[in-house]
Length: 588
Image (cartoon, rainbow, N blue to C red; front, side):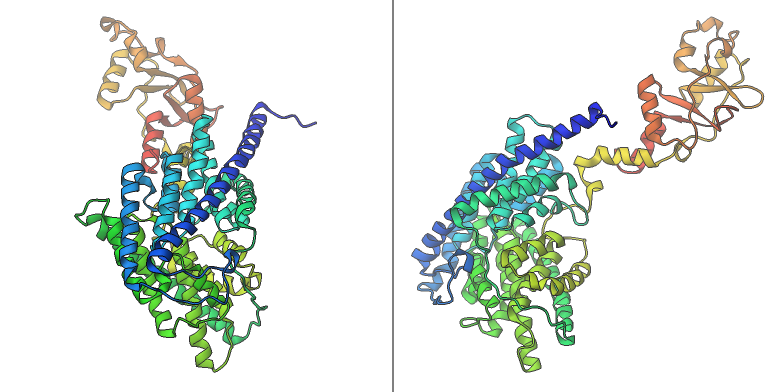
């Protein structure tokens, strides 16, 4: 019969508690996602619609239509309106919640790793600030605000219920995934993101199931307000796997890696520029908005989120965008989102990265079809695969990205080509730097897992790897005075006592020596004061066993013997030795 131990019951209770709490996190994230989308629509109508006279196209899942007519009444106002939005955002963020500036996902990642506060105030400020940034023409994405908003909900609930730091982090991760899953109508991807986005080559496994629960709940709640249709409508044919197509998607993977590296490089260079710019922080988003607006004068793809334009490319529609403008749009969108977000504007990098990837895929499809003299490449397929490949290379989140874009487009037929392209792009781009500044390589680098790392290192390290081999010893007939002198000269607090055959028969410590009156030390033998049959350890024991032994018995050191029968001394190990080893490994 199997019995549940108290520890197993406690762990089971904690798991169920987090699953239960993921439901209210998902409900709040879903409500805020719907509120964000409504706020974004109204800001877009006011800033771009009423003032500029530009009504951006929408993706099919948000009411977009192929009957759209592109027109901008007051084109020259775009930079000034974007600057006005940046000024409003600068005031809001600087005065109310500085952490709401920039890339929301990155702020949430930083809060996760370093235990920083992310409250509801930050979430609400982020909601409004991001809606104004995108609605006024800033090139930014939806995932950043919803990642921070969802993360803020999770962290806030954890604070209210006085949960442990680990539990608060899991709810933060679940909220992050729920926010993204709701706003993009991609609940499965939201759950995966809650575990994948924090690392370049690892997963926060404990957050995966709570992330799925929160994400599906958020999707259901948000969908009751904004609908459940996929964001994009696509008709992607089944792959033919011709030689030309396979070669084309290999080229797309290589190109995506180059574009992603260019985007990361420009993003951080612009970020350094604004960091060093001798201007008050309130004004920087306005400057960034104005510069992004200048890009919008050349191409409408750098205005707002441009999902509607990507919808056109998926439908092989290029009525208003010529091939030269399409090619030029790649660096211009990179510049626009870098100006918007690096200056302190609010939003995310996922949306612009998708747009850049979609433009890259669409451009290559047109170029390849012209070169081959026919419709060899389906433009919609290459557009979607480009979206996946570029963001994967730029953010090192391959699994969640491919699932997210597939859910957004319902384009499951793209999977073979997408896997081919993204594997190439991901490996060529490498892990050195991504669009998420605080994304770490793996769990071992995260401060929140530092104790786990210590336990892991202590578990794999052996006593023989750490022990002092050249041990100072004394015979039983040595005087206490000699023991005191050696301890003072060698700066040691314990000396093993061995017989003529090198077997450990005792140990004498500083506290033992101090119990002897000074005038009697010269005539008192150490065998009179030593601890007989001392606790010893074996060379093949791991350090975790030794630490537990020290803690449970209140010891600071122990002789190391070959075995417990012969008790032959081979070394000495102390807490100080273990501490030095941990310092050497960089975890203390």
